[in-house]
Length: 50
Image (tube, rainbow, N blue to C red):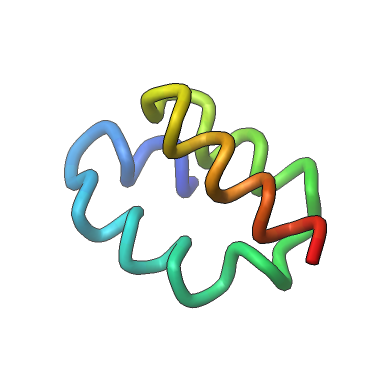
């Protein structure tokens, strides 16, 4: 569902990820960020590692 939201409203997806990316399951996070630019994907994956 997050991936589809990102297709329609990237700002909403970014706001959600800023708040929840570090606590999301890795598979969900990967699906949510798959359409983002490379630098943003790296940023959110890095948050998950902390």
